Image (cartoon, rainbow, N blue to C red):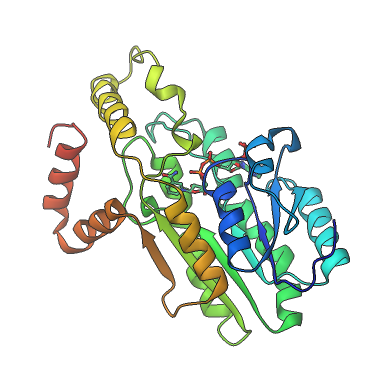
Length: 281
Ligand SMILES: NC(=O)c1ccc[n+]([C@@H]2O[C@H](COP(=O)([O-])OP(=O)(O)OC[C@H]3O[C@@H](n4cnc5c(N)ncnc54)[C@H](OP(=O)(O)O)[C@@H]3O)[C@@H](O)[C@H]2O)c1
């Protein structure tokens, strides 16, 4: 990788698409040299459209410690610094929690939780030696208010929120800042799911709910997803200047959902949520 030590260095995971790829130009505009990482270099077409001399592309699979170590070592060899980590890589296969195989639970947690822990642990010693650094975790509004059919994903984001909150408390006097971004619903590949075209499961106690939820999600995805640049701009702003708050919801839908979840008594919240997504209240 070319050295560009005049600029602070931001390492971003999951840059093949979606929020990750949008973070790259947003961070460059904020004055960073961006190390844009992805697990499969063959999937870099979208990234190539936004790269310039302030971007280095490296392979990093958050579930593969060897690629994490190699990427961090390459950055340090070239620039000697890592100022910001954006933990963005994530996956969200839909399923009813009862029907999700344990292998699916494990694979989602491997990426959304253990992957973020592994990459964070790989950069913290450098940030500590520098006496400063910022870690931005891309969580989800689902990390505080779950949605049916996305329960495995939401559980992994709940765990991520607990991890981030603890990390922030433990790093209080280290000069390293931790922030959590909680997006609502944004138009990315995460919604390109076979769910929308899946056949109704036979013999499932959830068959009726599945039909209703599929109709809800089809309509929601077609009409209500937001522009992921909104999230990328917030990530870049947090990377450039830390704020006192730990959690940063983004998107009107996220703010409304969190307000309802916080303010309504549970029975009212449950009835309203089920009605809004097409289930029997
Ligand atoms: N879109 C939303 O509405 C929304 C809402 C809340 C939170 N989020 C969060 O935003 C983050 C980005 O998601 P997105 O919406 O931009 O979806 P996306 O377009 O599907 O992007 C996900 C990215 O994560 C990468 N990834 C998955 N597993 C990985 C691994 N093991 N190692 C490295 N990279 C891996 C994917 O790479 P491949 O191309 O190789 O699969 C892809 O680049 C996720 O953490 C997600 O939970 C999104």
